[in-house]
Length: 180
Image 1 (cartoon, rainbow, N blue to C red):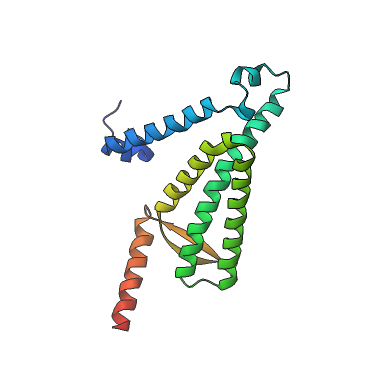
Image 2: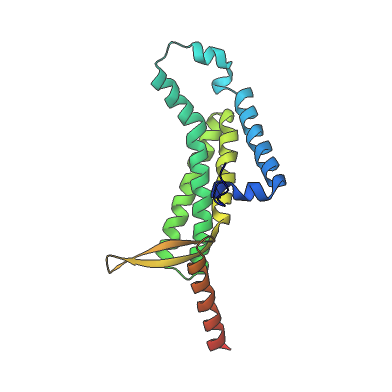
């Protein structure tokens, strides 16, 4: 290990600073892993699933549909709902807010459909929701950016982007001074 200050990966630095957070993270992941291990697909034991003569790609596709897809959809829906709230509060176009809300609702319904068809996918749904809330906790604000000279799209400003956060804070302070 070198003496370089960046020797510890930057995405793990919060865990290095807060061991309680690391323990909670490890506990949550072990709980999800245990739930998946205890609830194999279709209620059959894992050894039966592995002994099945089906091709490997077919088994991987089934596991993807059972565990990965509901988690991705849950994460996507939580991110879109949070995104919609922030867009609405920033004064975005009503049609844009409605479109984001429709996408979020559709993703949530598809994810819940997957969980209702196989309760074994519940842990991945929970993990996807937790990931969505964690990602959106890092979001500072939403801005509208112009692309190709005419197309305006919502653009996230993350808490780690100090320059953009400072610009937003200065703009808010300027508006407050002009208003009052």
